[in-house]
Amino acid sequence: MVRERAVNAGSGRRSGYLAAAVVFAIGMAGTTLPTPLYGLYQRQIGFSELMVTVVFAVYALAVITVLVVAGNYSDKVGRRPVLLCAMALSAASAGCFLLESGLPLLFMGRLLSGGAAGLLSGAATAAVLELAGPGQKARAGFAATAANMGGLGCGPLLSGFLAEYTPWPLTLPFWVHLGLVAVACGITWRLPETVTRPQRWPRPTPQGVAVPAAMKGVFVRASLAAFAGFALLGLFTAVAPSFAAQTLGVHNLAVTGAVVFSVFLASTLGQSLTRRVGTRLALPLGCGTLVIGLLLVASSLIAESLPLLVLGALFGGTGQGLSFRAALTLVSDAAPATHRGGTISAFFIVAYTGISVPVVGVGALATWLGLREAGLIFTGCVMVLAAGAGTYAALRPPGQT
Image 1: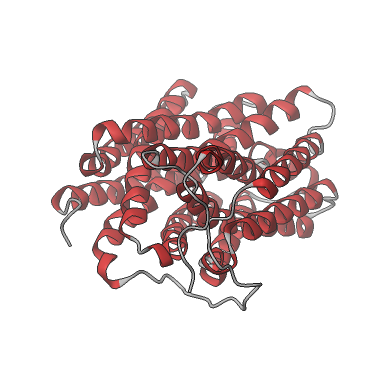
Image 2: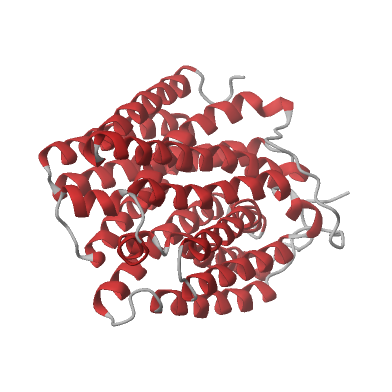
């Protein structure tokens, strides 16, 4: 039977959770690296706005598939082997983009990247939490969620800058990421293993969205808020560059990358505030702030204003961060130790459904109504969802089933 810990409390564990967070951040940065580059790929290969969202959805579908098939695999085989596999998939994804010659390799690169993110979401989060020493649980929770969101934000910031100001816009970002992946592999190799008696590559046992019965009430409240917040992130990572170029007239890739980065930066800020606010209030307050952010995004499309879009990213990201960290804390605290990796993976399945399905709807609507109208419909729908999730969290706070 898998146990929760294999490392003794000591300096190795205390320093290990920060090292694991660095690995987590590097892996997640690779998943958003292509975000500012989609416009370049559109011009080079020639495909529609709907295809941009489909390419993005392929990534999210891969994340969900891996979470369903192997979301609990690190509970059995150990955290380190799964992290190393994720780094290998991330490197292979970068290789596909370096060799890119059309849509097939673009799709393959996103599939591999999604596989890496799927492995990282459960295994890296569990590793960061388990490597924290006594009294460091709250810090480790912030490190895990900040590494996730911070890594996602650094990807477009890095690639946007390199694409705009270097002669190799479609290759240098991926070479740089390969170097970072090599560093992450070296760090992972030295991490203590936190699963005792890990099995030697057992056959995966797909769990679906499996949640222990005793915590289903907590899981529903947490996952609804995560779905709404990740829908906003999907909007910024999949179609915000197109919004900026077509609706706002912003064609500088570094600026586009910075706009996408701002929503993840704000998310990290929101996560840092969660502990002060308290988990009981963070879910409804985060959802309310998310609604304000969505209103600002909608206003930016109507007024064709970049400052309003940035304000929407900042408010929306802060709300997403508040609710996301509170939700992840609730789920990880309520999950039994032997099912923590699998339960966290189930939580991320819901979240990544939110980041993928709505943006494909935006792409489809954009082909019929136009990008601005599709964006307005999207923001309206997610506002209703976020308001509902916040109301539900306020009426059924933690401690109630």
